[in-house]
Amino acid sequence: MSKNMDYPFESHYIEVLGSKMHYVDEPGPEESDLVFLCIHGNPTSSFLWRKVIPNLKAKGRVVAPDLIGMGKSDKPDIEYRFVDHARYLDAFIEQTGLKNIVLVIHDWGSALGFHYARRHEENVKGIAFMEAIMGTISWKEFPPSAKLIFRLFRNPVTGPWMIQGANFFVKRMLPMFMIHKQTFDEKEAYAAPYPTYASRKPLYVWPNEIPIDGKPKDTHDLISGYRDWLHITPLPKLLLWAKPGALITEDQVAELEKGLPNIQTHYVGKGLHYIQEDHPNEIGQTVAKWASEL
Image (tube, rainbow, N blue to C red):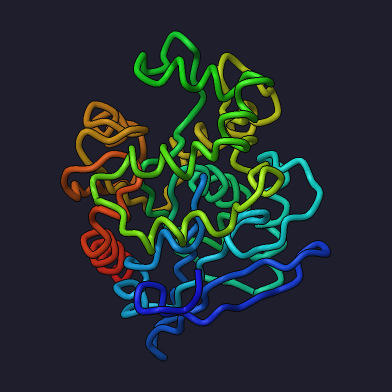
């Protein structure tokens, strides 16, 4: 993930809880006090936002961290559970002094962002989310096409073998859930942070954190908490969605429009899960325009 034309950003590092976290920090117009905080999920990094950032920085400062253990951030010997990532992200936001935040969130980055906003509503101006984790789930509700693979991911034998050994999330899940055909350089950039079995531990832990049938209980409770909060908070919300989508389908968009106060929705086009690869300009321009009117 070296600096190049596809990822033309300076690297910044800050020590957080004894480890270095890497982040992009692009200045916006002097007259703007907006701070776009872009939070990625599994198995990505700030690289996922590289084509979205230029549109956002036209309206405000853009900060895009690599979650602990991911991207170019350090890989300390921790469990990498949801609560661990939340602790590091909280400390990152506090130590960088981010204020007036517009959250731009995806995948597990959405869960972390929603969880932060619920506890620090006074520091958040709005939430733009896409392919987000909106609540808990049961195996009965799980999409049939994904049920088997996620049962394998959560098996203590097959999960590590597939994700840490065969690097399944980076090599298969990423290209499988985008329409954009990855270039060689993009494949290399996404794979670079995870060259070894041990380095892929966060990628294995994430699917085991999905709260299915109430387990794991602590993650279930935290996600249930922000789900309920999203249905009452007046914070401005923007949902960007694609067809057919993966985590958020067209039917779910209609439910969220009815259930969440102060929400706008925007269809970006055909896409699955990693829609920043398929519609980066549409996402960036839409979020920037919406945020500038908050």
